[in-house]
Every structure is written in structure tokens, then in C-alpha cells.
Amino acid sequence: MSKNRFTLAVHGGAWEIPDNLEKAHLKGMKRALNKGQECLSRRGSALDAVEKAVIIMENDPIFDAGKGSVLNTDGSVEMDASIMDGKNLEAGAVAALRNFANPICISRRILENTEHILLAGKGCEQFALGQGFKKVPVEDLLTERELLRLKELKKNKQYKTEYSFSNKRGTVGAVAVDINGNIAAATSTGGTPKKIPGRVGDTSIIGCGTYAENGVGGVSCTGWGESIMKIMLAKETAEKMRSGSSAQKAAEYAIDLLHRRCNGLAGIICIDNKGRIGIYFNTPKMARGYISSEIDEPVIKVK
Image (cartoon, rainbow, N blue to C red; front, top):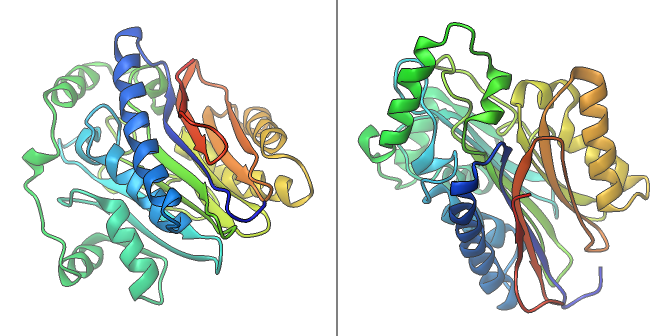
């Protein structure tokens, strides 16, 4: 990709988005794109841009991340997130995090201030507190919508995780290339509805839900985490770009592989080392959008 050009793509989940929620998804993604664009246009890093974009979506209750997270079977909220810097392959991630507003920010601190990649449980909580993050009451992360959803799902003994892609908000993510050619990716989620406490999906696993590598590309995934983990969807997409495929061809290949191998449901946003954007999904809809230094207004879609 040429110097002094930037590209940013975001997603707000791949699922059966009801018509009456499309407008809210479009608004949320536009705000995220504008925040990331502001960073990149001021010569900010790709890592900063994806973090800032994801924070906007974590704070928006329309998405299944941060404020809008779905609930566990016991009514608790547990969140996963990850962020990766393609310049040096450094990454940070949290799993099953409770009582913090922006898990993507804690993931960034893990990347910068530890020798580790993934923290979970009480150790993750203590790390976050030590870094100056404040705990929030679970009520700050609960929405009436999700309390009612859990109540209904508990009545449905036939419910399976894969059904959630017709009745839940989606994981959020962002991928960026900055003017120096550095690539970064970030993903955040509240998981799947009615999950067992302690369940960890693809989002916090590098190579599954998130991947970034300079000279190759960046990827953020959304969808049925258990199927995504089985084939390491983000890494499959990246390897296809490494072999010379465009971002779009790589995304199409990876989603097709996911479907053939394990009947998986997912969506992908990716950017290759030439700054080309790839977006593909096999769910009914996917909230997604992009902006670059070459266009004046963000492009955002849900269908």
C-alpha cells in the first residue's frame, strides 16, 4: 500500500438484523468509522484507530459488546476482546471479563505492558485494576432487552448456540492500515446468549477472531465462535492473502471453507497489504462499513 494513504473497516456483527434495528446499526458504525478516520487522518497509528473505533461500539448498546453484551445463564455479563499490532505481531486479549466497561482498552494494556497475550479470570481483573481501570456495577452493562431475552431463552429447552444468529446483536471489530503501512485489528464481544459462565469464544483467541501482520493483512471475524475456532478463521483468511489473493477473495475463500468444514456461520472484514478491503458473510445480514483516504464519506451497509 502506498504511503500517506489509510483504510479502515468495521463490523457490528453478522446475524439476522431486524429491519427496525438497521438504522441504529448504521449510526453506530458511522460513529465508529468517523472516530477511526479522525485518528488516521491526523497520522495516528492503525492500532490507535482500531481501538478507538471499537470503544465507540462497545459503548453503544445496539451491539453485543460492552454495554450491549448478552447475558450468561446466571444473568452475569462476561466479555472477550483482542487487539493485534501487525508491525511486530504483539497482541493482547481478555477472556470472560466481568465488570469493566471497555475490554478492548484492557487488551491494549496487556499488549503494551505485559509479556503475555491473554488474561482471564481474577488475574485479568487484578491486572485491570492495577492499570487504573475502574470496575463498574453489572447494572451498567445490563440492558432490559437482554434481561427479557434471557428469560425467554430459558423457557426454550430446544435452543442451541447456532440459533443465536437469528436473535442476537453482533460482535464488533475493526481493521486498519495507517499512512505508514502498519496494519492492526481488534475485536470485542459479549459472547452468545444463554452461554455457560466461563465460556470463551473466538474473539479473544489470536488467529481465530483477530489477526494482523504487516505485509500480509488484517482480519476481524464475527459469528458462531465455536465454528470459527475449529478452523482458525482469521488465520485462514490471512494465509490466503499471504499467498497473493486479494482481501475480497480471501474472505470469500475462508467463509466457504468454514461452511464446508463445519457448517459454520460468520462474517469477515479484512484489509490486505495493498489496502484493498474484503467483506464477506454467510449469515442473513452483516453490519459493516469502511472509509479510506480516497473517499469522502463512509460506506456502511447491513444487507
